[in-house]
Image (cartoon, rainbow, N blue to C red; front, side, top):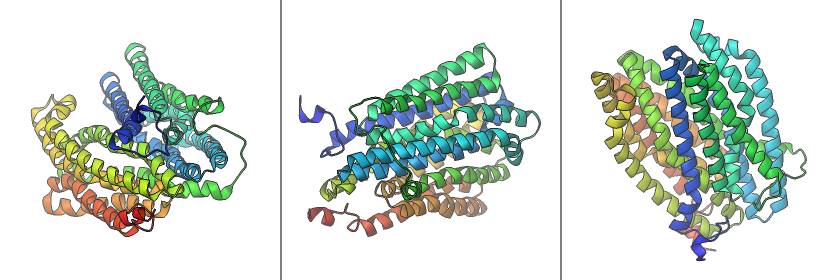
Amino acid sequence: MSKEHKRIQLSDHFTYRRLGRFVLPSIVMMIFTSIYGIVDGLFVSNFVGETAFGAVNLVMPVMYVLSSVGFMIGTGGSALVGQQLGEGKNEEAKRTFTLLILVLFIAGTILSILGYIYMPQIVRLLGGEGELADLAVVYARISMISMPFYMLQTSFQSFLVTAEKPRLGLGITITAGVTNMVMDYVLIAIFDWGVAGAAAATAMSEIIGGSVPVFYFFAKNNSLLHFTKTAWNTGLVLNACGNGISEFFSNIAGPLVMMVYNLQLLRFAGEDGVVAYGVHMYANFIFSAVIMGFMVGSAPLYSFHFGAKNYRELHNLYSKAMRFLTVAGVSITVLSWVMAPLLASIFVGYDAELLDFTVHAMRIICLQFLFVNYAFFGSGFYTALGCGITSAVLAVMRMVGFQLPALLLLAVSFGIDGVWASGPVANALSALLTFIFLIKDRNRLGYGKYAASKE
């Protein structure tokens, strides 16, 4: 067996082919997650109705905020664990991993109980009334039952890569996703359970996605990680949360930006603007999944070699990542431009005027893919190196510092086209800020060519 086809380890030297093989399961995993999320929405919209679809979308920001706790501990914690593995502290890494998963499950359980109890009040705060509010409460309360498992699932997406088991993570995600789609059909289309069926189907998939890795890490396995005896360490938990805080901020800022988007769209284009933006969001889930999957798959590599002080390999990985992001950004932009009519017709093909309006919007917004990949990378790369504050600054500036002002100012000058252009403009500024930080820190953190040459 050639060296390229042996089991890939974090400590390896990575060629393009080897890096591609290692990150591909994570990319496919994120794409598949996006697809079955879209299928979920299609089932509710087509079999239950507009009010039910609106009810699900109304409480979705709550789900994003709660699940972001899992992303925070998963990304921030896996960076710490990866660095410990790189430093040769394997037993300490296992104790850290065990403690963080335990803390996450306890926190997730508490948040879910509170969410279940106070969901009617939360729905009212979000503006829900009448039947819309009733359906939203039903969907959200069922979702709260599985929320701790969903938090675990999002966290394990990072930890399984750190454990050198990205393919296992992909297999679990596919299993959970297929379960969701099949049960959507059974509970909604056949048994006519409505939003309760949609929530139950999602809950079943989340329980599978969160519990299977628990059984794996409890059992004897050949990965770098498994559960072991641990002890409470406040500093370690705070360090993991602080390191992954950018992911938490991004998920909180996302719904805020979406609210402002909707307000501007209603002002300049009415309901058609909201519909067009919704179609773009579904397409954006898939295209962004490529970049997000690359970051989830490659982040443990940066953490490991940074911890091992192997700056030559860190520079190698950084250089290859930047080239991949450039090629991916151009390719996704061209693909999304070409596919805009097809993607729009899936959702609004019944209205020719709305279809043209949506395609025009998508072809302006898709220009953001030339820049957003660098913004995603910068935040994730700094998290992987344990620079949580820098990561958070980049994430908050992208969503709040650039996106919100662009939304407000460009709309005044250019109307609805200014709203569509705010994404590309904000992400271009965010990419510029990311490059400033990356160039400034390249030798201090060891991924610059000069730093690498000293090894």
